[in-house]
Image 1 (tube, helix red, strand yellow):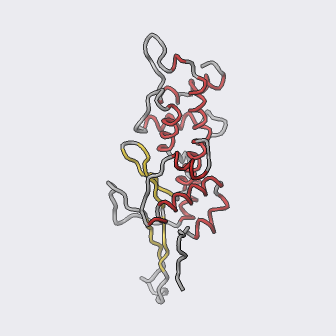
Image 2 (cartoon, helix red, strand yellow):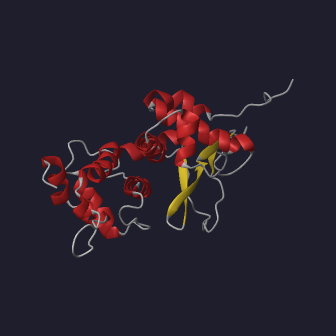
Length: 238
């Protein structure tokens, strides 16, 4: 009897048994699509655009996709692979358990878990990399303060402003600290609210902020993430 069903792909048991109850429906759908496009085709990673996520999942708002991907990243289930400052590929973070040997009672015979992560270009590996179970990874990410996926923040901003304002290619330390400071001003410090704020700025800002002024000045990321700018958007004084 064949072990695998034809025209199918596998999902790690831990995702279903331990994580699915705590995942949003959209995060699970994104995870399944990434799985289908990567290991489902025997590939370590795959290029999946936001528009492809929207098409396959029937989702019309980019922000919904970004929130779901941010959730998966924070749970330690996916890797976002960057190229020239932009996320271009996604891969799964996988693990497999090695069976405990018969002599498990001896000093050197112990059960162990091996981490399997897709090999990506320009990634330096070391022999002393620590491995953790998926469940442990999630616990660590949930309890870690300020667990922010800055790459997705950058992509959400670039998508919101499109070509109307300068896009950014790198999240510097100063920008990361500014994002953390802005999050404290939000009613709820979530990625969803931050992404919504970027779109709200673009929707409500006057032409002045898009370069229609005597100086030719345009708002940029560093200006938009200032708490004072956020306050203007909230109070309608922008």
